[in-house]
Structures are given as C-alpha cells and as structure tokens.
Amino acid sequence: MSVGEIVLIAADLAVALLLAVWFTGLYFGIKRLVKPDKRTVDYLVEYEIEEKGLDRAITGIPFEQMFRTSRFGYELAARFYACEGSSKTVVCLHGHNSCFASQLKYLPIFLSLGYNVFIPDHRRSGLSGGDTVTFGAYEKHDVLDWISELRARRPEDSVALFGESMGAATAIMVAAEIPDAVFLIDYCGYANFEGLLTRYTDNEDIRKAVMPSIRLIAEHCFGFEVKECDALEAIKRVSCPILIMHSKADKTVNYKNALMLKEAAPQAELHTFPDSVHARSITQYPDEYADTVKEFVRKAEAAYARRENDA
Image 1 (cartoon, rainbow, N blue to C red):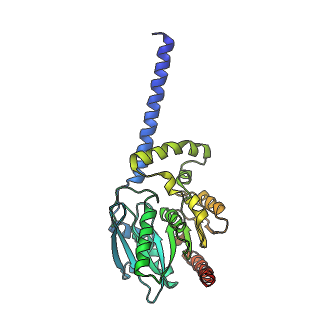
Image 2 (cartoon, helix red, strand yellow; image 1 turned 30 degrees about the vertical axis):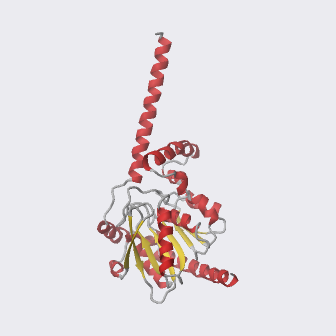
Image 3 (cartoon, helix red, strand yellow; image 1 turned 45 degrees about the vertical axis):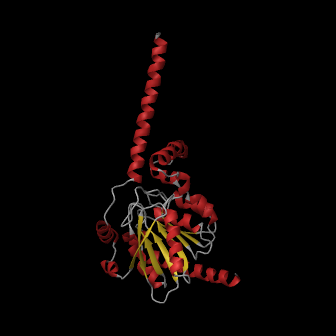
C-alpha cells in the first residue's frame, strides 16, 4: 500500500470520526430537549411563585380537573377555570417542560375579561403522559382534540388561544386549524426549529446547514417531523386577529422570531418589551402587559362580533 493510499484512508477515517462525534453530540443535545427531566407540579408551582411573582392566592382558585386519552395513546390532563355565566373560553398553552402552573399568572387577566380559562398539560408535562416533547408536532393535535371535547361539552362557547414560548408556537399551529377563533396571542413564541437555533448562532448559513441533521435525528430517533412544528408557515393561515408579544432582550427565543412571524402575518399586532428575559415581561411590566392584552382582546371581540353578524 502506497503512502498516498494510507493518507487517503487516514483522511477518510478522520472524517468518519468527526461525523460520528458530530452526530453523537447533536443527538444528545436534541435528546435533552425532547426528553428533559420532567419537573413535578409542586416544583413548578413553587417556581412560578418564587421566580415569576405568581400570587399564591391564585393557586386556590377553584377549577375542574379534566382527563382524556390522546389519539396517540397516552393520558392527558387539563384544568378548566369557569367564569360564571361566560360563554367564551380561552385556551392557554404552556411552554417547554412546564405545566399548567406557568399559565396561572394569566388567570386574573382573562377572568377579568369574562373568559373561562382552559389549561392543558402538554405531553410529558404536568399530569399528562407521553414519552417526548415534540415542540408542537404532536401537541397541536392534542390541543385540537381538547377543543373538540370542549365544544361538545359547551357548544355555545367561542374559543380563543393564548400561548407562551413553545405553547405560543403550538397555539399558532392550532389557530391555523380553527377559522372561527376569536383571537390568537403569541407570547415569546418561536417561528420554527431554525428560529430556535437563533439562540445559539446569528449565522443563517450555519442554521440552515445544521437543519438536515436535526430533521434526521428528530424523525428517526424521536419519532416526529420538524416540518410539523412550523409556526411560521401556520401563521399564514390564521384568520383571526393576532397579537405578537416579545421582549427584545429575550435570549431563549430570540426576538428575531417575532419579526419573522410578523413578516409572515403583516396584519398581526406586535408589542415589544425592552429588556425582560424570556417569559418574564408580565413579571417586569405587569400593568403594561395586562393593558396590552385587554385592549387587544376587546378589539378582537368587536371584530368577531362583526364576523358573526355578517355570517
């Protein structure tokens, strides 16, 4: 064997080793996101109280505990907070590795607007089962099935959507399938999987280069397709009024995601906060946050009433 052949073999082995290291590192990185250590409900409630200023008294508001079996075979849990005499319900969706607890701080806003509040635990979250977090790919179907159940139980109710972080992206995907939704509020949500990568690099070429590997690992190792969690495409099909809320200082879900969503849905309202970290704007700017939501909801309700009258 010549020296040249030995060099070529060594080079091939080096490339193969680098690829193996690359895929192994990427696999475990994705696994940490898709199969995070599941945090307990008690831990998350205390976390919301201590870190995000949740009023402990809110945890005592009465609710109906609901369960159903997902079309994918695992048990799902949810909470329904009734506003007496109301015929309108807002579905509030939590973020990655969280549960209903992260949505309790929004209860006073929506209850004051006369909304029942429905908060499901996503798969692998809270009291729900499921083996993986799929960033909306399976979660959106679970939420749509919950909404079908709500409508069967409460056919007179209108439905609106609110989501935080991963829940916001999921809410966008759900709203795209519900033409009669009253409104959609996207709070610090991501545009798509590539949008999530803006947390790690501003270089678009690098993000695009990584995506084929991510798609391959997600589908073949964790059983979901990245294209099924694309809020950027879904928002183009949303027909109800949209409010996008995001902090310019968000480093978990980069503010660029809000701009991407706004570009895809020019009719959406965009409200920004200057310096709050991820999902903390309501904590840092509670009055501004509540006033923005309330003003938007009132306008959306007026638009919904006009649509209903014209139908």
